[in-house]
Image 1 (cartoon, helix red, strand yellow):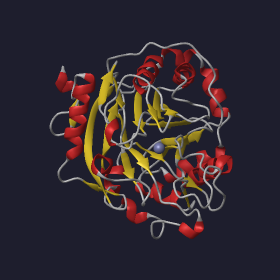
Image 2 (spheres, rainbow, N blue to C red):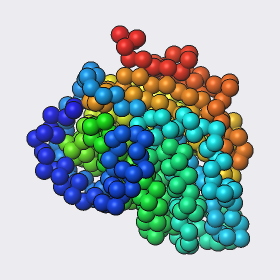
Image 3 (cartoon, protein in one colour):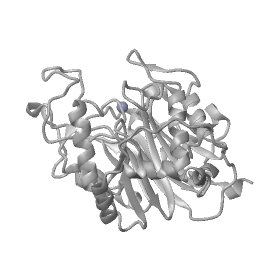
Image 4 (cartoon, rainbow, N blue to C red):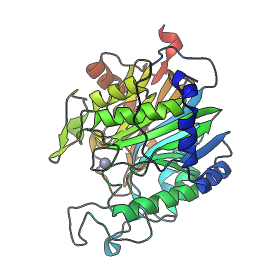
Length: 385
Ligand SMILES: [Zn+2]
Protein backbone atom coordinates (compact mmCIF):
# COMPACT_ATOMS: atom_id res chain seq x y z
CA UNK A 1 0.00 0.00 0.00
CA UNK A 2 1.97 2.95 -1.21
CA UNK A 3 -0.54 5.57 -2.02
CA UNK A 4 -1.78 7.71 0.82
CA UNK A 5 -4.34 9.10 -1.55
CA UNK A 6 -5.88 5.70 -2.13
CA UNK A 7 -7.58 5.48 1.21
CA UNK A 8 -8.83 9.03 0.85
CA UNK A 9 -10.60 8.31 -2.42
CA UNK A 10 -12.29 4.94 -2.04
CA UNK A 11 -15.20 6.15 -4.15
CA UNK A 12 -12.96 6.46 -7.19
CA UNK A 13 -11.90 2.82 -6.97
CA UNK A 14 -15.51 1.80 -6.50
CA UNK A 15 -16.49 3.79 -9.55
CA UNK A 16 -13.79 2.19 -11.66
CA UNK A 17 -14.67 -1.31 -10.51
CA UNK A 18 -18.32 -0.58 -11.06
CA UNK A 19 -17.57 -0.16 -14.75
CA UNK A 20 -15.79 -3.49 -15.10
CA UNK A 21 -16.74 -6.24 -17.47
CA UNK A 22 -18.05 -8.87 -15.08
CA UNK A 23 -17.70 -11.83 -17.41
CA UNK A 24 -14.03 -10.94 -17.79
CA UNK A 25 -13.63 -11.12 -14.02
CA UNK A 26 -15.07 -14.63 -14.00
CA UNK A 27 -12.91 -15.84 -16.86
CA UNK A 28 -9.75 -14.36 -15.43
CA UNK A 29 -10.43 -15.91 -12.05
CA UNK A 30 -10.88 -19.32 -13.59
CA UNK A 31 -7.90 -19.25 -15.92
CA UNK A 32 -5.42 -17.54 -13.65
CA UNK A 33 -5.88 -20.03 -10.87
CA UNK A 34 -2.21 -21.01 -10.76
CA UNK A 35 -1.32 -17.47 -9.71
CA UNK A 36 -3.29 -16.61 -6.65
CA UNK A 37 -5.09 -14.37 -6.24
CA UNK A 38 -5.34 -12.70 -9.64
CA UNK A 39 -8.74 -11.07 -9.87
CA UNK A 40 -8.94 -9.32 -13.16
CA UNK A 41 -11.08 -6.65 -14.68
CA UNK A 42 -10.62 -4.51 -17.73
CA UNK A 43 -12.05 -1.08 -17.16
CA UNK A 44 -13.83 0.42 -20.15
CA UNK A 45 -13.58 4.06 -19.10
CA UNK A 46 -11.05 6.82 -19.45
CA UNK A 47 -9.59 7.86 -16.11
CA UNK A 48 -10.56 11.21 -14.64
CA UNK A 49 -8.10 14.02 -14.07
CA UNK A 50 -6.40 14.22 -10.68
CA UNK A 51 -3.53 15.74 -8.69
CA UNK A 52 0.03 14.50 -8.17
CA UNK A 53 1.26 11.94 -5.66
CA UNK A 54 4.51 11.68 -3.79
CA UNK A 55 6.83 8.96 -5.13
CA UNK A 56 8.36 6.84 -2.37
CA UNK A 57 11.93 5.69 -2.98
CA UNK A 58 12.34 2.97 -0.34
CA UNK A 59 10.71 -0.45 -0.73
CA UNK A 60 7.95 -1.13 1.76
CA UNK A 61 7.54 -4.51 3.46
CA UNK A 62 4.88 -6.87 2.22
CA UNK A 63 4.37 -9.22 -0.71
CA UNK A 64 6.78 -9.01 -3.63
CA UNK A 65 5.07 -8.85 -7.02
CA UNK A 66 6.88 -10.61 -9.85
CA UNK A 67 6.48 -9.48 -13.44
CA UNK A 68 7.82 -11.01 -16.66
CA UNK A 69 7.78 -8.58 -19.57
CA UNK A 70 8.55 -8.89 -23.27
CA UNK A 71 8.29 -6.61 -26.28
CA UNK A 72 6.45 -6.89 -29.57
CA UNK A 73 4.46 -10.00 -30.44
CA UNK A 74 3.29 -10.50 -34.03
CA UNK A 75 1.31 -13.63 -34.84
CA UNK A 76 1.39 -13.62 -38.64
CA UNK A 77 -1.61 -12.54 -40.66
CA UNK A 78 -4.58 -14.28 -42.21
CA UNK A 79 -5.40 -11.19 -44.27
CA UNK A 80 -5.60 -10.84 -47.15
CA UNK A 81 -6.62 -14.49 -47.42
CA UNK A 82 -4.83 -15.05 -50.72
CA UNK A 83 -1.55 -14.04 -49.06
CA UNK A 84 -2.19 -15.49 -45.59
CA UNK A 85 0.94 -16.27 -43.55
CA UNK A 86 -0.02 -17.93 -40.29
CA UNK A 87 1.83 -20.22 -37.86
CA UNK A 88 0.68 -23.86 -37.91
CA UNK A 89 -2.02 -25.10 -35.54
CA UNK A 90 -2.90 -22.54 -32.92
CA UNK A 91 0.56 -20.95 -32.98
CA UNK A 92 1.75 -23.09 -30.04
CA UNK A 93 5.09 -23.78 -31.68
CA UNK A 94 5.99 -20.08 -31.64
CA UNK A 95 6.43 -19.98 -27.88
CA UNK A 96 7.51 -23.52 -26.99
CA UNK A 97 11.12 -22.58 -26.16
CA UNK A 98 10.21 -19.80 -23.73
CA UNK A 99 6.97 -20.94 -22.11
CA UNK A 100 8.67 -22.07 -18.93
CA UNK A 101 10.07 -18.60 -18.26
CA UNK A 102 6.75 -16.89 -18.96
CA UNK A 103 4.59 -19.01 -16.69
CA UNK A 104 6.14 -18.36 -13.32
CA UNK A 105 5.61 -14.64 -12.68
CA UNK A 106 2.50 -13.15 -11.07
CA UNK A 107 2.06 -10.97 -14.14
CA UNK A 108 3.31 -11.85 -17.63
CA UNK A 109 3.17 -8.96 -20.06
CA UNK A 110 3.74 -8.41 -23.78
CA UNK A 111 2.79 -5.98 -26.53
CA UNK A 112 0.38 -7.62 -28.97
CA UNK A 113 0.88 -6.18 -32.45
CA UNK A 114 -1.72 -8.31 -34.19
CA UNK A 115 -5.49 -7.89 -34.27
CA UNK A 116 -7.33 -11.04 -33.19
CA UNK A 117 -10.39 -11.37 -35.41
CA UNK A 118 -11.77 -14.11 -37.63
CA UNK A 119 -13.07 -11.76 -40.30
CA UNK A 120 -12.96 -8.12 -41.30
CA UNK A 121 -11.20 -5.93 -43.84
CA UNK A 122 -8.23 -3.76 -43.03
CA UNK A 123 -9.10 -0.10 -42.67
CA UNK A 124 -5.42 0.75 -43.11
CA UNK A 125 -4.24 -1.19 -46.18
CA UNK A 126 -5.75 -1.96 -49.56
CA UNK A 127 -5.81 -5.68 -50.43
CA UNK A 128 -3.38 -5.38 -53.33
CA UNK A 129 -0.94 -3.09 -51.56
CA UNK A 130 2.55 -4.58 -51.34
CA UNK A 131 4.15 -2.26 -48.81
CA UNK A 132 1.35 -1.78 -46.29
CA UNK A 133 1.25 -4.10 -43.29
CA UNK A 134 -1.97 -5.07 -41.53
CA UNK A 135 -1.89 -8.02 -39.17
CA UNK A 136 -4.96 -10.11 -38.34
CA UNK A 137 -4.79 -13.58 -36.73
CA UNK A 138 -7.50 -16.03 -35.59
CA UNK A 139 -9.16 -15.36 -32.25
CA UNK A 140 -8.25 -18.90 -31.19
CA UNK A 141 -4.63 -17.76 -30.79
CA UNK A 142 -5.67 -15.91 -27.62
CA UNK A 143 -5.90 -19.24 -25.79
CA UNK A 144 -2.33 -20.05 -26.88
CA UNK A 145 -1.08 -16.74 -25.52
CA UNK A 146 -2.79 -17.52 -22.21
CA UNK A 147 -1.39 -21.06 -22.11
CA UNK A 148 2.06 -19.60 -22.82
CA UNK A 149 1.72 -17.54 -19.65
CA UNK A 150 0.55 -14.13 -20.81
CA UNK A 151 -2.11 -12.64 -18.57
CA UNK A 152 -1.61 -8.95 -19.44
CA UNK A 153 -1.16 -7.47 -22.91
CA UNK A 154 -0.85 -4.01 -24.35
CA UNK A 155 -3.10 -3.54 -27.35
CA UNK A 156 -2.09 0.06 -27.92
CA UNK A 157 0.40 0.26 -30.80
CA UNK A 158 0.65 1.11 -34.49
CA UNK A 159 -1.10 -2.15 -35.50
CA UNK A 160 -3.92 -2.23 -32.93
CA UNK A 161 -6.25 -0.34 -35.28
CA UNK A 162 -5.25 -2.12 -38.53
CA UNK A 163 -8.85 -3.39 -38.75
CA UNK A 164 -10.56 -0.36 -37.26
CA UNK A 165 -12.87 -0.32 -34.27
CA UNK A 166 -14.20 -3.75 -35.26
CA UNK A 167 -10.71 -5.22 -34.90
CA UNK A 168 -10.08 -3.50 -31.58
CA UNK A 169 -13.33 -4.84 -30.17
CA UNK A 170 -12.86 -8.34 -31.57
CA UNK A 171 -9.38 -8.47 -30.00
CA UNK A 172 -10.79 -7.32 -26.66
CA UNK A 173 -13.47 -10.02 -26.72
CA UNK A 174 -10.96 -12.74 -27.68
CA UNK A 175 -8.59 -11.74 -24.87
CA UNK A 176 -11.47 -11.46 -22.37
CA UNK A 177 -12.60 -14.96 -23.26
CA UNK A 178 -9.07 -16.31 -22.85
CA UNK A 179 -8.71 -14.60 -19.46
CA UNK A 180 -6.03 -12.13 -20.54
CA UNK A 181 -6.13 -8.58 -19.23
CA UNK A 182 -5.53 -5.91 -21.82
CA UNK A 183 -4.93 -2.22 -21.92
CA UNK A 184 -5.29 0.02 -24.94
CA UNK A 185 -7.51 2.60 -26.58
CA UNK A 186 -10.57 0.98 -24.97
CA UNK A 187 -9.31 1.53 -21.43
CA UNK A 188 -6.93 0.47 -18.70
CA UNK A 189 -6.58 -2.94 -17.07
CA UNK A 190 -7.26 -3.27 -13.35
CA UNK A 191 -6.72 -6.33 -11.16
CA UNK A 192 -5.47 -7.60 -7.82
CA UNK A 193 -2.67 -10.02 -7.08
CA UNK A 194 -1.42 -11.05 -3.61
CA UNK A 195 -3.87 -8.49 -2.16
CA UNK A 196 -2.09 -5.71 -4.06
CA UNK A 197 -4.32 -3.73 -6.40
CA UNK A 198 -2.73 -3.08 -9.79
CA UNK A 199 -3.47 -1.26 -13.01
CA UNK A 200 -1.84 -0.97 -16.40
CA UNK A 201 -2.20 1.96 -18.76
CA UNK A 202 -0.91 1.44 -22.30
CA UNK A 203 0.10 4.40 -24.44
CA UNK A 204 0.97 4.72 -28.10
CA UNK A 205 1.75 7.40 -30.65
CA UNK A 206 -1.39 7.10 -32.79
CA UNK A 207 -4.46 9.31 -32.84
CA UNK A 208 -6.47 7.46 -30.19
CA UNK A 209 -6.64 8.11 -26.44
CA UNK A 210 -3.59 7.41 -24.24
CA UNK A 211 -1.03 9.17 -26.46
CA UNK A 212 2.70 9.22 -25.73
CA UNK A 213 2.90 12.76 -27.13
CA UNK A 214 0.33 14.19 -24.71
CA UNK A 215 2.34 13.99 -21.50
CA UNK A 216 -0.04 16.15 -19.48
CA UNK A 217 -3.04 13.94 -20.24
CA UNK A 218 -0.93 10.83 -19.61
CA UNK A 219 0.10 12.16 -16.21
CA UNK A 220 -3.51 12.87 -15.34
CA UNK A 221 -4.49 9.31 -16.27
CA UNK A 222 -1.64 7.85 -14.19
CA UNK A 223 -2.51 10.04 -11.18
CA UNK A 224 -6.10 8.89 -11.29
CA UNK A 225 -5.11 5.24 -11.60
CA UNK A 226 -2.62 5.69 -8.72
CA UNK A 227 -5.36 6.87 -6.42
CA UNK A 228 -7.28 3.68 -6.96
CA UNK A 229 -4.44 1.14 -7.06
CA UNK A 230 -1.34 0.24 -5.08
CA UNK A 231 0.74 -0.28 -8.23
CA UNK A 232 0.43 1.35 -11.63
CA UNK A 233 2.28 -0.18 -14.59
CA UNK A 234 2.75 1.81 -17.78
CA UNK A 235 3.31 0.39 -21.26
CA UNK A 236 4.28 2.63 -24.14
CA UNK A 237 4.84 2.04 -27.84
CA UNK A 238 7.01 4.89 -28.95
CA UNK A 239 10.36 6.17 -30.15
CA UNK A 240 12.12 5.81 -33.50
CA UNK A 241 12.50 2.41 -35.15
CA UNK A 242 15.27 0.19 -36.45
CA UNK A 243 18.93 -0.73 -35.92
CA UNK A 244 19.89 2.95 -35.72
CA UNK A 245 17.40 3.64 -32.93
CA UNK A 246 19.04 1.85 -30.01
CA UNK A 247 19.82 5.04 -28.06
CA UNK A 248 17.29 7.14 -26.17
CA UNK A 249 17.92 10.66 -27.47
CA UNK A 250 16.15 12.48 -24.61
CA UNK A 251 14.33 14.51 -27.26
CA UNK A 252 11.30 14.08 -29.55
CA UNK A 253 11.76 11.29 -32.11
CA UNK A 254 10.24 10.64 -35.51
CA UNK A 255 9.80 7.55 -37.69
CA UNK A 256 8.36 7.46 -41.21
CA UNK A 257 7.53 11.14 -40.88
CA UNK A 258 5.48 10.55 -37.74
CA UNK A 259 5.96 12.09 -34.32
CA UNK A 260 6.93 9.12 -32.08
CA UNK A 261 7.17 11.11 -28.84
CA UNK A 262 9.89 12.09 -26.38
CA UNK A 263 9.96 8.81 -24.50
CA UNK A 264 12.48 9.99 -21.91
CA UNK A 265 10.36 12.97 -20.88
CA UNK A 266 7.27 10.78 -21.04
CA UNK A 267 8.65 8.03 -18.80
CA UNK A 268 10.07 10.41 -16.21
CA UNK A 269 6.88 12.47 -16.11
CA UNK A 270 4.77 9.38 -15.55
CA UNK A 271 6.97 8.12 -12.70
CA UNK A 272 6.66 11.61 -11.20
CA UNK A 273 2.88 11.18 -11.50
CA UNK A 274 2.88 7.79 -9.75
CA UNK A 275 3.84 5.11 -12.30
CA UNK A 276 5.75 2.22 -10.72
CA UNK A 277 7.14 0.39 -13.74
CA UNK A 278 7.47 1.66 -17.30
CA UNK A 279 7.73 -0.92 -20.10
CA UNK A 280 8.60 0.48 -23.52
CA UNK A 281 8.55 -1.10 -26.96
CA UNK A 282 8.19 0.02 -30.56
CA UNK A 283 11.77 0.63 -31.79
CA UNK A 284 12.05 -3.13 -32.65
CA UNK A 285 15.47 -3.14 -30.94
CA UNK A 286 16.54 -3.34 -27.33
CA UNK A 287 17.23 -0.03 -25.60
CA UNK A 288 18.75 0.83 -22.25
CA UNK A 289 17.04 0.81 -18.87
CA UNK A 290 17.33 3.07 -15.86
CA UNK A 291 16.11 3.31 -12.31
CA UNK A 292 14.45 6.65 -11.68
CA UNK A 293 13.09 7.48 -8.25
CA UNK A 294 13.27 3.80 -7.33
CA UNK A 295 11.23 2.75 -10.38
CA UNK A 296 12.51 0.75 -13.34
CA UNK A 297 12.10 2.19 -16.83
CA UNK A 298 12.75 -0.16 -19.79
CA UNK A 299 12.86 2.01 -22.90
CA UNK A 300 12.46 -0.79 -25.41
CA UNK A 301 12.13 -4.54 -24.98
CA UNK A 302 12.56 -5.09 -28.74
CA UNK A 303 10.89 -7.71 -30.89
CA UNK A 304 9.82 -10.83 -29.01
CA UNK A 305 7.98 -13.08 -31.44
CA UNK A 306 6.81 -12.92 -35.02
CA UNK A 307 5.67 -15.07 -37.89
CA UNK A 308 7.29 -13.56 -40.98
CA UNK A 309 6.08 -10.12 -39.89
CA UNK A 310 9.33 -8.56 -38.68
CA UNK A 311 12.79 -7.97 -40.09
CA UNK A 312 15.07 -9.97 -37.77
CA UNK A 313 18.50 -8.92 -39.03
CA UNK A 314 21.21 -7.99 -36.52
CA UNK A 315 19.90 -6.26 -33.39
CA UNK A 316 16.32 -6.66 -34.65
CA UNK A 317 16.54 -10.38 -33.87
CA UNK A 318 17.88 -10.00 -30.32
CA UNK A 319 15.53 -9.71 -27.39
CA UNK A 320 15.00 -10.55 -23.74
CA UNK A 321 12.52 -11.59 -21.14
CA UNK A 322 12.71 -9.03 -18.36
CA UNK A 323 11.87 -10.27 -14.88
CA UNK A 324 11.09 -7.60 -12.31
CA UNK A 325 10.25 -7.83 -8.62
CA UNK A 326 8.39 -4.91 -7.07
CA UNK A 327 7.69 -3.99 -3.46
CA UNK A 328 4.04 -3.17 -2.78
CA UNK A 329 4.87 0.52 -3.18
CA UNK A 330 6.38 -0.04 -6.62
CA UNK A 331 10.08 0.26 -5.79
CA UNK A 332 12.02 -2.31 -7.83
CA UNK A 333 13.85 -4.70 -5.50
CA UNK A 334 15.26 -7.08 -8.12
CA UNK A 335 15.35 -7.59 -11.87
CA UNK A 336 16.92 -10.00 -14.33
CA UNK A 337 17.48 -10.13 -18.06
CA UNK A 338 16.94 -13.50 -19.77
CA UNK A 339 18.41 -13.07 -23.25
CA UNK A 340 16.50 -14.38 -26.22
CA UNK A 341 17.08 -14.45 -29.97
CA UNK A 342 14.48 -14.77 -32.68
CA UNK A 343 14.95 -17.67 -35.07
CA UNK A 344 13.32 -17.24 -38.49
CA UNK A 345 10.47 -16.64 -39.04
CA UNK A 346 10.48 -15.09 -35.55
CA UNK A 347 10.45 -17.83 -32.92
CA UNK A 348 12.01 -16.74 -29.59
CA UNK A 349 14.69 -19.02 -28.14
CA UNK A 350 16.96 -18.63 -25.12
CA UNK A 351 20.21 -17.09 -26.37
CA UNK A 352 23.26 -19.21 -25.38
CA UNK A 353 25.47 -16.19 -26.16
CA UNK A 354 23.35 -14.03 -23.80
CA UNK A 355 23.86 -11.02 -26.07
CA UNK A 356 21.00 -8.95 -24.62
CA UNK A 357 22.85 -8.55 -21.31
CA UNK A 358 25.83 -6.76 -22.86
CA UNK A 359 23.59 -4.70 -25.14
CA UNK A 360 21.34 -3.47 -22.34
CA UNK A 361 24.24 -2.85 -19.96
CA UNK A 362 26.14 -0.82 -22.56
CA UNK A 363 23.15 1.23 -23.67
CA UNK A 364 22.07 1.88 -20.08
CA UNK A 365 25.55 3.09 -19.16
CA UNK A 366 25.91 5.25 -22.27
CA UNK A 367 22.45 6.81 -22.07
CA UNK A 368 21.87 7.03 -18.32
CA UNK A 369 25.29 6.59 -16.69
CA UNK A 370 24.53 3.29 -14.95
CA UNK A 371 24.56 -0.26 -16.36
CA UNK A 372 21.83 -1.21 -13.79
CA UNK A 373 22.49 -4.94 -14.33
CA UNK A 374 25.62 -6.91 -13.44
CA UNK A 375 27.44 -9.11 -15.95
CA UNK A 376 25.07 -11.97 -15.15
CA UNK A 377 22.14 -9.77 -16.16
CA UNK A 378 20.95 -9.30 -12.59
CA UNK A 379 19.97 -6.29 -10.52
CA UNK A 380 19.59 -6.63 -6.75
CA UNK A 381 18.73 -3.46 -4.89
CA UNK A 382 19.99 -4.74 -1.55
CA UNK A 383 23.47 -5.37 -2.98
CA UNK A 384 23.81 -1.86 -4.27
CA UNK A 385 23.50 -0.06 -0.98
ZN1 LIG B 1 4.92 -1.23 -33.69
